[in-house]
Image 1 (tube, rainbow, N blue to C red):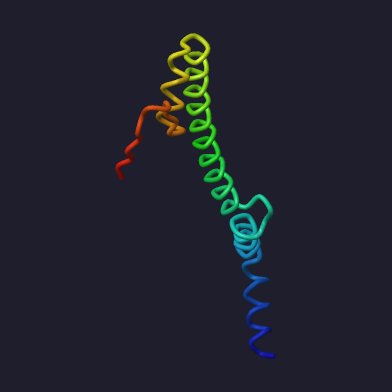
Image 2: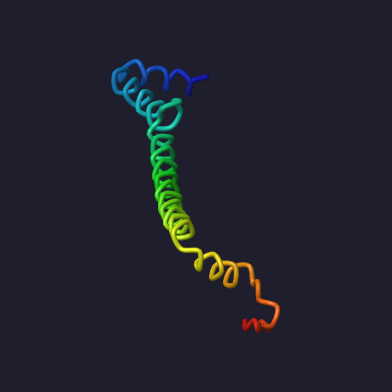
Length: 97
């Protein structure tokens, strides 16, 4: 009981600094918008922006390929052979790994 009185006495003497410390702890660690969560959110935003950029590049490549297929019918045969391993009736396909 004596220990509690000492703590309470210390808090009463230093009430402003104790209030600031409590506020700081709540602000940094406990609050819904704490600094720790802000760091997590910023990291997640950065990851999502990288993913958006990757999908944008993939979209541009696919668009270029689609335009090429619409303009050049020989490109259809090339893609069918390379990607889907299709062949003509008199050909043999060898796959090397």
